[in-house]
Image 1 (tube, rainbow, N blue to C red):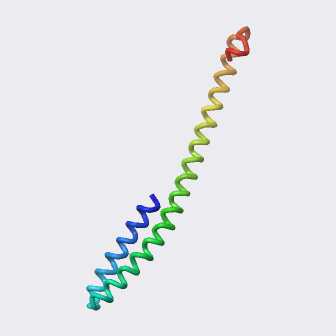
Image 2: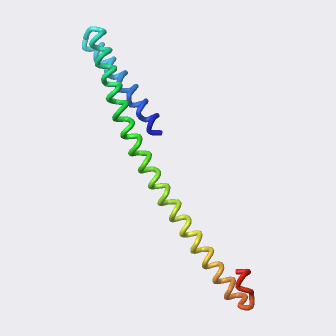
Length: 95
């Protein structure tokens, strides 16, 4: 994910630099050098942004999974308690 975001931002920066350089009437060498520089900088910024987004998403999903696991454990405990209340002579191993 981080790699894909970096590549997309780098290519977007490259295209924008090309278009603005051509529109400004700069020489082809200047336009290409600036566009390549913008692409590399965009790639670095995109990689950092993608890595941060990946961490945020991973943390969010981990919290969500933990909450679901807690709910599930509480329901299992409640069901187990209700079952043992309903059948007090049931062996402890079966619970």
